[in-house]
Structures are given as C-alpha cells and as structure tokens.
Amino acid sequence: MAYFNVLFGHPYETPTFDEYAMFIAFSAALRSADLSRQVGAVIARNNEIIGTGANDCPKYGGGLYWPEYDPNTHLIQDTSDGRDYKRRETPTK
Image (cartoon, rainbow, N blue to C red; front, top):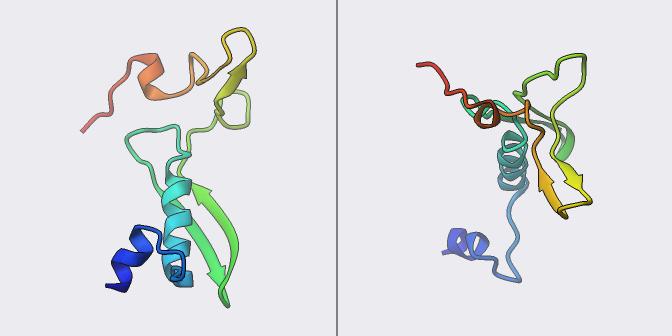
C-alpha cells in the first residue's frame, strides 16, 4: 500500500532515498540525445547525491546538445543537427 501512496503522491508519505535516487537516474536518462541508449546514473554516498550523469552524444566541436528557446516562435526546440530523429536517422540493431 505504501508503494501506491508514494507512486500517486500521498502528501504524508515520501519516497526512500534509494527510490528518490532511482528517480533522479531515470530523469538523467531523459537528458541523453542518443535515443537508442538513454542511460542515467547517480553516484550517492551516505544518503547524499554526489553526482548525476547520462550516456550522451558529444556535440561536434565540444559540449553537449541542449534544446534552446526560440524567442520568435516562443518554443523550446532541439537544434536541427542534434538528436537522431532530427537527422532522420534510426538506431542500428
């Protein structure tokens, strides 16, 4: 029963640290620009999160791909050469 209370946001029951760290790892995985290998990780020690990371594609010339706000259209969009689906590429099996 406690699992469902946490899952659906019961106001008096909070997730354990391990559950919270797994949620952060899942969120970090969504950051990956490579849709075929979205993997997130959390490094924790003594119930403190030390770092997070994701399996991400490096951007040509350095850095990472980040969606950007377009003030003309008021939309947040991926760069045209960033993610796989923007380049019309599919992952190989």
